[in-house]
Amino acid sequence: MARQRSVFYLMTVPALLLFFTFHTIPVIQGIFYSFTNWDGFSPSYDFIGIKNYLSVFQDGDVLDSYLFTFKFAVLTTLLVNALSLLIALGLNAKIKLRQFFRGVYFLPNVLSVLIVGYIFNYLFSNVFPVWGAKTGIEALSGNLLGSMEYAWIGIVIVVVWQSLAFNSILYLAGLQTISEDLYEASSLDGAGRWREFWSITFPLIASFFTINMVLSLRSFLQVFDQIIALTGGGPGRATQSIAHLIYTGGFQGQEFAYQSANSVLYLIVIVGISFVQIAFLQKREMDM
Image (cartoon, rainbow, N blue to C red):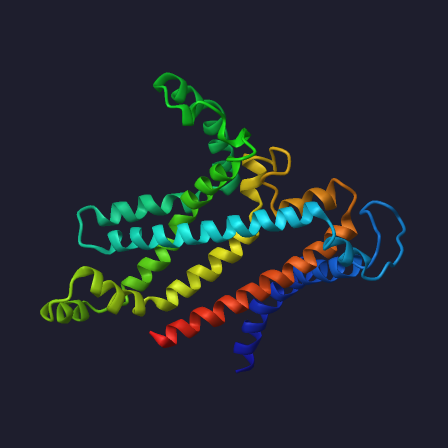
């Protein structure tokens, strides 16, 4: 037993130390600096209490970034889960080349988020306008990412396209846990496809739906890489997410302490939303 414990400690303690060094300590430091006026570069700073936290609620840029981020996260969460569930149902059906299609649909998840973002940036800026000009399609004739009104659509398209892969795999895993006997029994009772989905399929994958919804919303609330690669928060501040605002303000705008307070508040918001979401969705699981 002593040897087994030593092996377990050798596997867990280094990982714990790395986690504590590169995650826990920076979080504690960020909370500490949020009560100061440090700009991130000066050798000295002063404690100012909760002034940074009070200022966050009065900052128009912060409120605008919160509004954009919540709209973006809710929309992409709904789109990704609806589409990925449809794709998973198709990939779970008895079709030819099923394994091939599963591999193809999972490919976007393997690609780097930044690389995908820069590729789509080039497409939106250079390729699609040329196609629009040659085909006469007015919607493609301009750079979508350069429009203050519609730039967010380009980000949604890229995020949804790349996120479908992971969510589809989770839904597919859930669908494969359902026994075929249930569908055979329902067909004998005369149930149609729609009734089978709502009475058998969806209730039995409700836990997977909960996991996907929570992970998707939490991930999209922290959207950053796609913003950097596609729009940089622009045009103006039209597509500036909270994570992007914290990064630019903290590391480029000499607002390190102020954005630390913003990040602490946002951490509380994300944790709170996740708990509420889990409680609500798990309650629905029980009702099913």
